[in-house]
Length: 391
Image 1 (cartoon, rainbow, N blue to C red):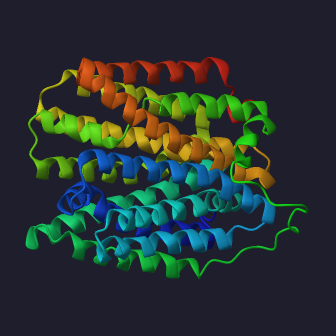
Image 2 (spheres, rainbow, N blue to C red):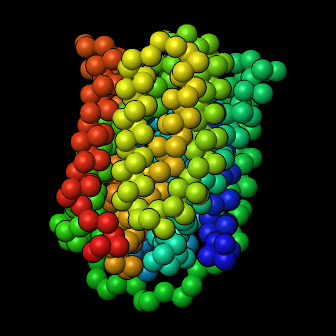
């Protein structure tokens, strides 16, 4: 695996540490916010605004990275901001301060995402892109296994001590930031001339980019509009009879399967093409949601979470590999950042739509609609969008 260069390894380790820090807090964030006086409505507003900020900033900072012909400063600043946001959440409990801390974290993600993905794409050849993105997703998700596991152990001995947990999450965050100092950037061409891009200018790439970009991204965004937060899956698992601890265990199990399968899925994508692997992942996703809609067997839920991990491994890294295949190298950060940004906004809308359908028509209907749309997008990719190797 000589194609896994030093830069790819460092970026992957950085993501592992960062995800460990974030996922230490993910399962307890709602409980912590409620413990300091946040209502469910205020939590929803907080998370929705944070995701919208992250979504819009991904495209902007991706375009800034392409404009400046530089990746590394965006990567370093982005990960540093996310690391700093963790202890900020524990220092004060004022709502405006908590909102500011979450915004810092989400802006950090926006600053780094496009530039980091462009660095990964630049380190890969045309025949290794899916493997590289799959390896990165695998390492990233190992952090998503370690983080909740550490949180469970800590809270077992120190129940409800959320503020200290936020301080402890700073440790892997600062390790990630220090690791970015080991990265080196190859000499780039001079920065583009003229004024820099405006905040929303990255959205122009939708019309400026290749037609195939709009086809691929358009299909993925339609899917994202029904691919709601994993919280709904966890809620459904809870309804099937799993205890709170078992639900968190199922979430860790899903991330473990994802971590183990992401790299092999990327290798398979390079060998047979990213489209068939991604389409297969969408079919598995549909099967999971049909199963969640119909089953009341708590044991069967674990099988569904296993399949859900396979779906994630077969789609997230490969969608970025597909986009990097079909866009010019100098536009890589803009193309990937714009996609990630629009995806974030659609994810926010998806959770709202799923929540509304769940409330008025029931969880079964919400899950079956999601499965049907996923199958429709899979069919669209097979019929209307050529594989990169066929362009």
